[in-house]
Image 1 (tube, rainbow, N blue to C red):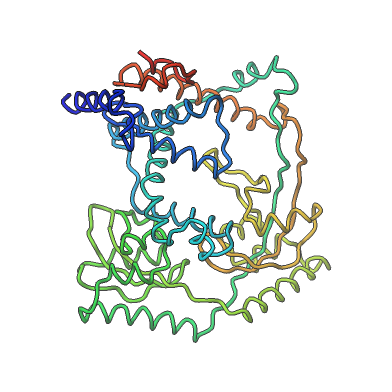
Image 2 (image 1 turned 90 degrees about the horizontal axis):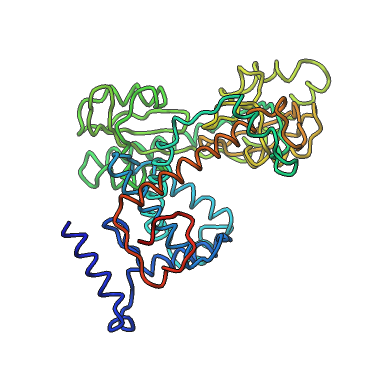
Length: 449
């Protein structure tokens, strides 16, 4: 209560005419016990402009309202003990930075554009990205039980005007045969020697495992935390990694070198709790030579020619030749996994960029030339792709696109649920708004009292 009274007094002081001209920053709203500063509004406005975002209505009203709604969700997330781990935040930061590097062309160009080092960019993104993940997780918790029946879907679209029927973009089904280029013995030995050196340096007391992980580990999700992973069950880890991690007993000792599907690791125990283990690790990935990639590409082109000649089918090649464990036992067919479930259909933008670029040029049944790409595990692989089917973009129909139409109805229900939740939350939350905002037309009712 004292904190609310203090914030109310601070708010009143900052909005008084006597000091308005001398204040460097201002509290423009108070939501619960959280102030919204004028600087926050301006930073959001600038970032939105950089991202090409457009506001519905007056940005001077919409931006602080958006920040206020975020604080409502964050407050509820704290009450409900919603958590986002540092490992998850770090992984998301690295993905965002990788995307930014791709857009700008290089790390150097990104640093020049942002006028910050990569380390400073990571630090500046951390809190906002963590809050975004918390808000998203809180929203998911609120709408997780919402379902719709087929009858509800039909009723929703029964009398809908033609121009309001959702458009289904072009979708494709893709089969692949993938081969992993061989890494030379010399390269494998180099990586293992590096890891042995790290172990020796820690054992001699020259440095700590955490310091070496921050400097050299190639796992972006844990590097910032000194290689530390959160408490993890055996089933969510790579089997080879888990076998060693769960057998560690002495936190002062470092494991032998472990090979996983991601590369080579050394592991150090932090703690065990029931059927979960907390460890830190250093990951190093062998570099594949250009000659090895060229050899794999040539072999796949030869395989594609044999399939075209009828010596065997693409499906037989996928089962007998492909290294990709996710598709090899499914006739090479790629699976699109999302929160809505699993399907074999992809919109082009949902495919890995290299696959989409190739598939977009193929006719149904045609096999591509070989190409290389980095897979989701961070490894270089060589691939040939076959376009199994293409469904051109069209207006959705209940018989052909029921899932698409169900998703539309379900999303509408979720939006209404979240809107109603915000309105109810506003009613039970202390809110104070500056006089400059009292004439605003807000999306949510109840802010002005």
